[in-house]
Amino acid sequence: MAVSRTPRREPVITVGLDGSPESLAAARWAAAEAERRDVGLRLLHAWPVLGPEPAEGPSDSDPSDWAKRMLDHARTEIRTRHPGLAVTGDLVEEEAPQALLRAAAESEMTVLGSQGMDPVERFFLGDVSMFVAARAERPVVLVRDATDGTGVPTTPTDEGGDVAVALKLHGPCDDLLGFAFATAAARGVPLRAVHGRGLPVNAYVPWGVDHDVAEETERAARRDMDQVLRPWREAFPAVEVVDGIGLVSPAKALIGAARTANLLVVGRRRRRRALAPRLGPVAHAALHHAHCPVAVVPHD
Image (cartoon, rainbow, N blue to C red; front, top):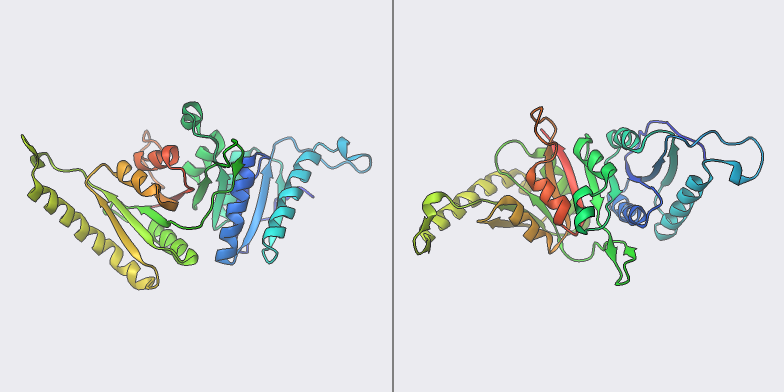
């Protein structure tokens, strides 16, 4: 398999492979999504020291031999599971973050594996995955590792559940909602629009919460959500939309929705202040705590 730098022109989903079980789970998830969307699948492995192929000699003299075998194994498995899917495998002699960012700009979405959820791993979450999710110009999906009870990662299932999307209800979010509605439509599942809104100070009284204020806060949030969703309901009439308004912080509302979702969709602003983090608090909460796959969608 030759090293490739050819730009992608046909619609494609790219998945980053590094030989880990998590990245193979991501490839399986990406293959199912590519089949639903009727696009191709690109398996990509990047490493800065792949080196040239030897003209002759045994395969163990080829510094790229392990990477080639890893890609071939993944491609064979995907083609067996999805015989009608166009699958390509590419080796790129480059640092993985830069190669994945370039591939992301040419892809419908980029899918990466995400490692375990113990406190240390939850903090680091994978340097490459976080780097790409925070900078890519197009959607990036991080696929969580599931286990079969023995600690062996398996592929997250798409059966049951809905697509949940986090909404602020203020500012532009067309890219976010376009991705969420299209994904729900491709899967034939409901879309849960999630919005968390904390209660104002005057809602708290000595005996608890003023229910009239709480109800008015919820009604205002629902009015705002209906206004934002109206054109998208008209554009995707077959998608059932369920609102998930909670009088809690946005992060808490989203994590609650993630318990029954098979995909969580969060937004990320393309342009942020110089010293601001590239991922906002809601996106961070989703990436650190949700166990279902998480799609990070950049928007203006």
